Image (cartoon, rainbow, N blue to C red):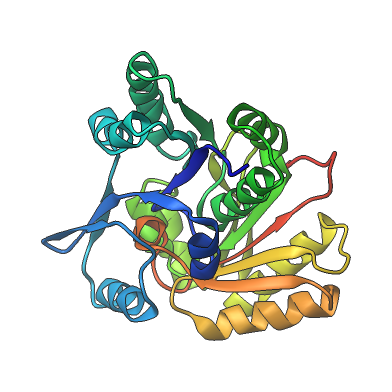
Length: 294
C-alpha cells in the first residue's frame, strides 16, 4: 500500500534536487531580504540563482530572514489535511529558529479539525543535516513505516547527524550576534576561521579556530574522521556558499579517509546563507547507530 502521508520540510533544508523530486518531498516557503528586496523561496534554487545571491552579499548588500508564522503553516497544511492526507513535517532546529514552535501551534489547531494529522518533528539540525534526516524519513516511509513510527524513529536518531562548519567572513557571524564585534575585527585581520558545530540541543556554537581556510578545512575532515565509522556507501554531504574550489578540496580529502563514501556536494540555500555569507563550507555525516552528537 502507498504511504498515506506526505513529507514536508522548510526551505532552510538542503538536499539534492533529484532526491526531493524522486521522493516527492514538499517545501514550506521561507522569505529573505537582500538589500531592499524581499523574496520568498518556494523550491530549491538553481545554481545561477544562488550565485547571484552570494554575489550580492559580496557587493555589500545586507541579508535577513523571516520566520514562518503559525498562520502560514495553517494556510499551507489545511488543504492537505482536508484532502485526507496526513503530513510529517521536519523543521529547522528549534535551537536556531522559532519555526518548530510555530508549526506546533498550527498542528494543535488543525488536528482538532481533521481525522488526518499534522505531525511535526524538530530536526535539531540545519541545512544538509535536515536534508539527511529527510532522506532517512523517505526511506522509512518507503519501507512501510507509519506516520507515527517514522516521527518516533526520527526523534530517536536525529542526534546521529553531525555538522562541522567553517566560516570565511566573520563579519556575517558578528551581524547575527554569534560573535562580538572585536572578535570579528581581530579575527578577520589575522585570517582566523572559526570551527562551528550543531550541538545536541540544536544550537550552533564555535568551539575551535584555525588560521587560514586550508587549515580550517583540514580540521573539518579530521573531525569527520574522528566521529565516523567509515565503510562503503557512507552518506556525506558537503555544503558550500559559492566556493566550489573549497568544496572539491573537501571532497578529495574525505575520499582519502573513506574511498567508498557516497558524497553529495551542494550550494547552501539563501535562508541559511544569509547568516554565514560567501565561502562557508560544511561537512555533514551520519554516525553509526548508538552514537549521538556531542
